[in-house]
Image 1 (cartoon, helix red, strand yellow):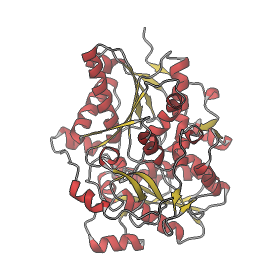
Image 2 (cartoon, helix red, strand yellow):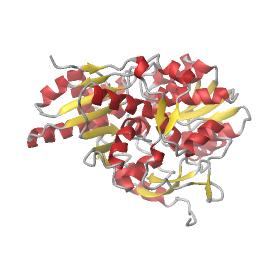
Image 3 (cartoon, helix red, strand yellow):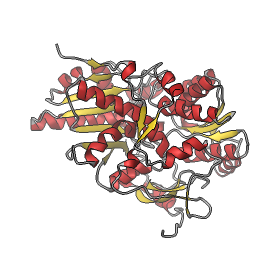
Image 4 (tube, helix red, strand yellow):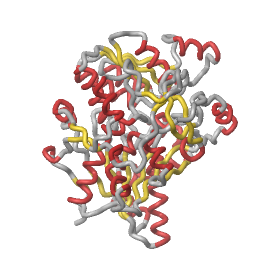
Length: 454
């Protein structure tokens, strides 16, 4: 009998997060102040001081507070699965594993950092948090985290997703959060954009601007972000550390290829960073790490590596990253969590140094893969996750052609139970592919900030 799942005991869960900044062959470029353009730390009003320290830390291990571990244990460790039925359907010699994050209360990987950020805000006496959300997975996860620690939350949800995914909004409201569509009339940024384009579908960059403006306007409020920045990727490594332990100690396996979807980068980085350490130190030089993004918002594959703002209004720090331009509004694909103009600086840095690769795939092909995964493994995946499933299947089929029995590890970021309207559109033949809007990107890239050389 071949084993189908691998389960870690609670007592064997990680007690510290892994910080890749300790092992980078070249340090990350410093952030730039949005006003002066000079190197800076994050503006203190944005985050609690403990989060600021984690953002810039070069310590290899950061202890996970017991209060956070206790909440982690309500759904962690998550299960590592062997996709035997998918392998059989593909007739591939490849061994496919996937780490499933859909069993958290919020249905995705996002609570790994949401709980941690809510804890650090509570510890500093913060009463209220603002944030943005794309598909609603981050907003619902932070709503859950804030509910655990008794913190008020306001969520600015990208308007196209607010309309496409009403149950995500209901989930946030059930946990006690206030959720509004972005752009909204609640902020100066939102009012300005609505005046220019009343039918704006919104973007993560716009929603970030609104949430930051709101946070800066009140003394009792901090801002929280669900992806991109270093401390978020740090918190997500709890998943990769679990996975690495399970694969090596229980499955007697090590991946040849790791695949995950990227919008801001936190889900996939959280899985692959504990593995990329082996590539950085030369232990596993042939390990391939494939970041998958939509062709409609191809940040790494077609964006420029440049200094840019993290938000539309230019209030967030300037970072060196792959970007499509902070004013770029992506097409309204159903994978709302992948509609961000930039990418995590850590992923961009590793890509520049040649330790990770990237690939873009079309929307229809991802749903085709998601349906095949559902019909073989039984899990209806989030539209974002379907991007990674598409490339996992493609790599497994390459193994079929070559006869190689490679081990493929899929980062499965969450379920698609709140995304059935997207599946309905696909199954009824109404879903379409969105091409890379080259002219809009060219226009957006004209607005990159001019940053003085270091």
